[in-house]
Structures are given as structure tokens and as C-alpha cells.
Amino acid sequence: MGDLELPAEIISAQLHRMETAPAVCVGMVLCAIPLLILIVFTMAMERGFDSGVFVCMGVPMVVAMMIWAISMERFRASCLGKPGWSDALRRYHLYGLGLSALVAGLLLSPWFLHELEILGRLPAERILRPVITGLSFAGVAVVIGLIGPRVHRRLKEILTPLQREVAVTLARDVLRRKLRSSRRW
Image: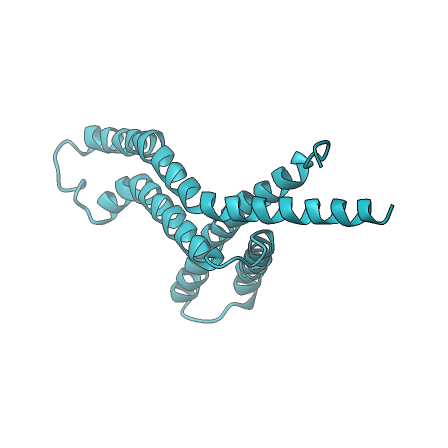
């Protein structure tokens, strides 16, 4: 037993899958939401049903949702079905989508201001538009630079206990298999 070494690559690969799958889930939701909005917006603009538009935007949305479902199942499997996997995935979605919504809001703020005609009423509209656009990009940089790492740390804190449990379970399984195979001799 003193010579028994646990293959680190087994645990490392499993832990990597535990981090990748929820990120893919959030990414697929982020892809599907704009596509859904585009479908609804296009259908509202057309005031009718154009099957070509629906197919062009609907198929990628369905594919994104299928990838989401597969990634969710992969996350559950990579967590070995341990209690708390669904709560960790839910919280991963909340943090990821919240950060994405904040970034999207900052990026779209100049457009919203223009559409609301707030800028158009101001005498210095030509000066304010690039300033507000620049501020929105600066806001995105601040959010990604300051809030992004905090969100990442928080997500790691959510996954760490689950990862630790999975690593210990994998180590026990490898040890049991090696002990069983050594008893046969």
C-alpha cells in the first residue's frame, strides 16, 4: 500500500469536466436568449409568421438548448450525482447570467438612451453619444476587471466542496480497484 499512487490525471480530468459543463450550460443559455428575442421581435415586426425566419433562428436556439441539456447531464455525471449538484448548477447560472446581463446592459445603454430620445433632445448630442458609448465600454472593462474575478472566485467556492467530495470518491474507487486486483495474486 505504501507504493500505491493515485493517478492524478483521473481526478484532474473529472474536476475539469465539473468546471467546463456548467460554463457551457450558461453559454448555451446566453446564445438561446438573444435568438429567442430575435424570433419574437422579427415575428412582431412582420405581424405574421415567416417560417424562414423561424427556421433560421429557431434551429440554432433548439441546438443551443440541446447542448445545454447534454452539458447539464454531463455536469451531474461528473459530480457523480452527489447531493448539491443541482444547487451548484443553479447558482452557476444565476452568477453567470447576472454578470452577462450587467455587461449587456452597459453595452446597450447608448442605444437605449438614443431610442428613448434622451440624447436627441440635448443640444450636445454629437458630443454626448461618443462619450456615453466610451463610458459604457469603460463600464464593461470595470465590470469584467473588478466584478468578473469576484464572480469567478464565488463560483469556485460553490464548486470546491463538490469537487473535493468527487475527488475523494474517485480516489477511494481507484484504491478499491487496485486493492482488489492485488488480492487476486
